[in-house]
Image (cartoon, rainbow, N blue to C red; front, side, top):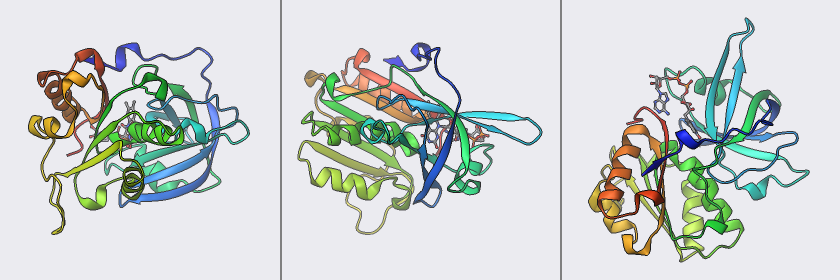
Length: 259
Ligand SMILES: Cc1cc2nc3c(=O)[nH]c(=O)nc-3n(C[C@H](O)[C@H](O)[C@H](O)COP(=O)(O)OP(=O)(O)OC[C@H]3O[C@@H](n4cnc5c(N)ncnc54)[C@H](O)[C@@H]3O)c2cc1C
């Protein structure tokens, strides 16, 4: 099993850029998507992230990483637009500002794209197994949007863990993508209770769930696991225990458990 951190690539030409917020969309009660115009955006690979830097009036600066949610195809020359999707953490320093304070027309500083390892493009092939917890869906959504834009027929499975039904990010878009593509399977699990009519899983991701959702290890899928640290550890260990090739299990940890 391999981790994104040691091999993160930061190209020397990565500069801080002033990005203009074009639109802010509410995804769930605690999650917003920011559409940003980034002058001279060089393009990205699905799975990469940017660093966002905020500067207070007294010069104090805070930096955090946010994954690119949009497909690379959205950021064509002359239309240098990217999407970030950010969850507000109650005690957080940066995420409350980005989800509650900023307005369309504001500018924020960012640099990127960053990361050369936790990435996938259609050229990498598959099958593809994506496992997300909470906002861990963000880089995986970039992969699925790219796959759809390119009309790829690489078989793909997404297993996505959220707390409640209302916390499922991109729920309607995921439904649409799966309905339009019989080579894409989207399976949800809810960890803190489900609506009465819910017919999918209602617990944390465990080995049995992974075995029933993901293709057999003999199919040698490429696996991408992203979310809170604890969830990423347990899922990636379970995939390897089930027989998946550790070299084909890639992980990205967003931080402490969100559960
Ligand atoms: C490569 C990478 C990509 C990321 N992409 C995204 C993304 O697309 N969307 C997104 O919302 N976040 C993403 N994150 C997490 C993000 O960088 C911040 O850690 C998060 O927004 C919290 O920042 P904050 O300043 O609000 O909280 P902080 O002030 O840093 O922390 C406040 C409290 O929250 C806890 N905490 C910190 N981070 C997390 C977390 N991720 N989950 C739960 N608790 C946490 C801290 O332990 C602390 O108790 C990513 C992280 C990495 C490393």
